[in-house]
Length: 203
Image (tube, rainbow, N blue to C red; front, top):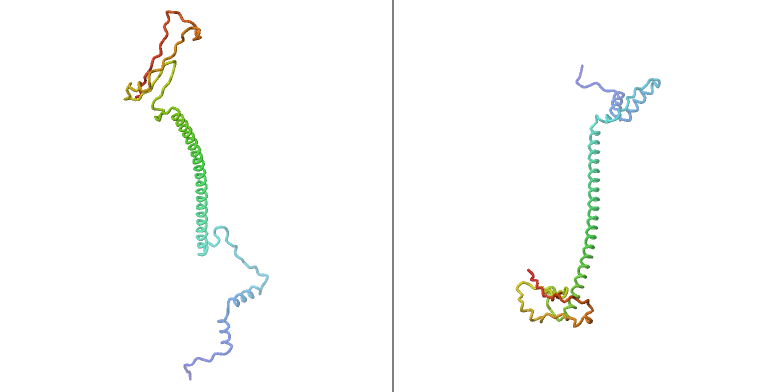
């Protein structure tokens, strides 16, 4: 009489199934190697490796590698450009600072020369004012003597009354005789020109 219970399994069958279930990668590799070494004379067909740009083109890791390499190249390029700009800016600032120093030195030298010339002119003018006893500006009124004639420069608005303050025009002494003058004698019909006073009014 048949019952619903399964037939008993032998111990050999259980051990075989357990062995198949417990195989690891090392066991599989060992089995493949044993199968290959059964007939050493048999040629093994090994596929050729891929070449050039097709290397790893079918794998996702290859594209990840390409992207990371491109980003690295871009980063290095940006760093080089930034370093180059910093170097150019430093060189420009150094040249600019050098030009400013040269210009400042030249300006200081010219300034010292002008100040020295001004001080010399002021000292010379002060000495002349002390000797003449006149505190007025020496450029206000100038007197020039040319060929025995007095030339007086006046500013607008000055009257001729100031001539009395300076006194009469000095007379030029005339030689009393030909021997005293030491000049050649002139014919009697030649007249001697008398010195005149020229007045120039400044505008």
